[in-house]
Length: 218
Image (cartoon, rainbow, N blue to C red; front, side, top):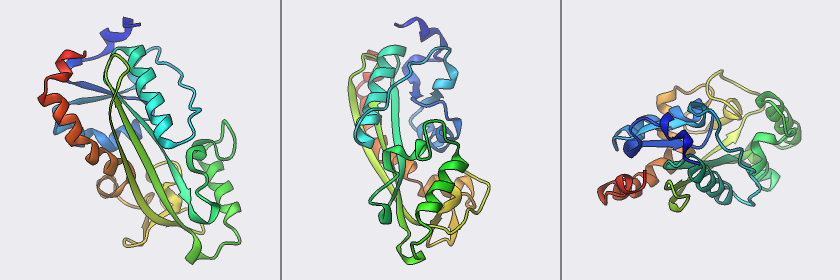
């Protein structure tokens, strides 16, 4: 089970983000650097576990990703489950955000389906929020900390901006009159649901490090 430990640099001071999406990881790397942690992703490993995201909530899916992946890799793992919740659609696509238009849907296909479902919804009612739940597990696969972050906005009538990923070009931060696809990575890092969840988790991570837990488990 621990044959992949050799892929981890400085295991007592590294954290594996349980995703292969380097764009997601980039949003958190600078925040974690302040704790002296090097952030890696599943893309850095040759055979990460394929976790079945069959939980009924963001929290359940994040915990599954963290605990199962940590036990597989023998590392501290940060599990993330996030998505878009649109008020006019009763919170959909929610935990199905990445596969809203089908199991193998592209970002563009998911955005197109969202626009189709909101076609008859007036702009004032196109409110939504991005939600992110983070779960931290130690190398034994035990859940050690959790946090949730949210970012409210509204869904544009059409995509705007080439930055970000997923629904970012449709999600407008009302105060900035810009979508996440138009805002710079620096601004997005300050405002995003994922960054807010990470900032809420940092005190718990720092407490574990201060208690010597990173050295005891890894």
